[in-house]
Image 1 (tube, rainbow over the protein chains, first blue to last red):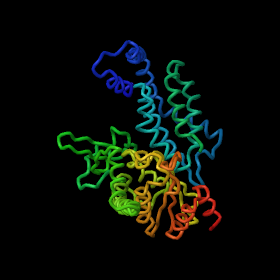
Image 2: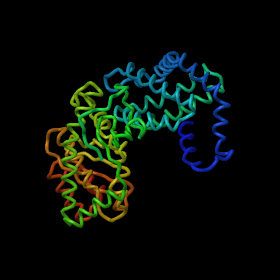
Image 3: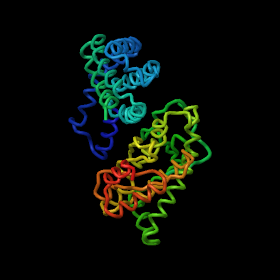
Image 4: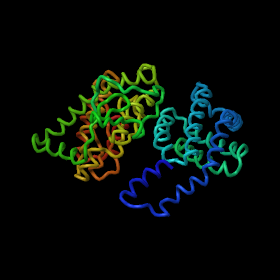
Amino acid sequence: MLSQLERLSFQVDGRYASDAELQFLVDYVQSFRLRVETYQRLRDLELTLVKETHTKMQAIDPTLFQIGNQDLVTKWKRDTISTLRYSAVAVLINDSETLQERFLDWFQTMIRAFGAQRSCDVTYQVMQTVVKQHFSSAQADLICPILELNRRSLGMLN
Amino acid sequence: MTTAIDSSIPLKYPTKHNHYGFRDFFQFDSTQGTIQDWNGGHNILTTEDFIIGLVEGLEEEVGDASAVTMYTIGCEWGKADAFFFEKWFEREFDRNVRQTNLLFLLETWWWPFTSQGWGRWEVDMGDRKQGFMFINIFDSAVARGLGDVGKPVCFLYAGLFAGFFTELVKKQLSCIEIQCYSMGETYCKFLLGSQDRIDAAAFWLNEGATARDIEKRLRAGE
């Protein structure tokens, strides 16, 4: 939304915006209450989401938390919480572009430096199923596209 | 372009590491007319025309020696930046540069350059044990401005890598661009290694070898 507002302010320089150009604001206002509720619930359930994602991942493949002999659960938790908080803000302000620019572009290079792409791929895939169990479908529809963006940005194996 | 200055930006969030977005990384002070970055570097905005003017103007003044001149400037810049980097890395991560994951360290070094418009990079350290490595640059600021001129143009980058890595590993290293956007390729590729390897690559390049040929010959132990 902030990225769209910034673009709008450039595009309508010296003229009025058309109704079509203002539509994203109308959509945002209409979704605002749902976004705030979703944000608050994400905040309240942060630890539950991380814990359940961790448990499911352990069941899928315990080596997801290991690189060589190193046990990376603590690091994984810290990174996942951090990503989840940025994701929550992206849900609140409807701005995946800012999430990408200010966080994911940087974090992607760090994840690759540590070779943790596979772990990220599974994390944000599993987290989408966990989210669907704890949130209404309307709320999950706001969160899951952001988690999928995280998965595609951080989990790409190349 | 950036130069180190004494005073650092008073940081509100000293432990925030993802500060490379345009609005986070640069602090525009309209009263002073300055642009400081997150690490306290003093930045100057330039146009592509400035870079074209710099490269072509130098070529007009000193002819073929312009390549060596740009490489040398890059080398000095890289060496100076290695010291600058060491300081801000230790300040930000509370850790010595030699006690950290190498790829993480290198990614962290390059991020300010990405924010400043020097392009994104990719480091291929697969051949590190053999004493050489490759660096890809996507969207080189020099090549982007000059366009397809049929020869490598990113001597400044080659010097920057040679200078920085020489300081980092405390061993004399050289660098050559073996593929360039200005040769009609989609990205630039640099080879970093000892002087004899770089001389060999320069010879092969001169004989018409492609970057792929050079990679194969090096990996075959030539």
